[in-house]
Image (cartoon, rainbow, N blue to C red; front, side, top):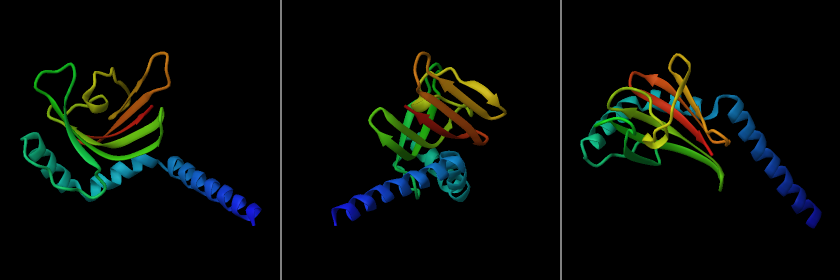
Amino acid sequence: MRKTTWRLWVLAAVAVLLVWGIWQLCGGPRLWTRQQFGVHRAAFLETAEAALAGEPWRSIPGVQSLNIWPKAGTEDVEVADFATGAWGLGSSTCYWGIYCTTDGGPAGFQGTDMVLTEDAVGEYSWQEEDGDNHYKTWCLEDGWYGYLMEF
């Protein structure tokens, strides 16, 4: 009986890792943010406008939180950050979501002052010096971006 229970736990863990791996290979957070923004585009636009004006925000399916951050290194530019997912434990965690900026340009994670490198048209990244933290952001449409931050 104990051997069977142990084997079931191992099979369940392998299944979870397999599903996670397939999700990552198929685009994972990038695919999720593009799909979510496409389906709920009007709600994202309306909610960001309200939140940036200091009004309460309404719920959008799949959005866990909405924060307004100042965009570091700029004056009077804000980031409306819609957190849509997270995965991991402790220091091995990744976060993804959708954001817009009042200047229409890309921003670092939570508005921080990251020096972004343009990898391709509309795709930017940041890599921590002497570390393994990295950030990717991609254009969804003018002024709107998806992001993935991995610690």
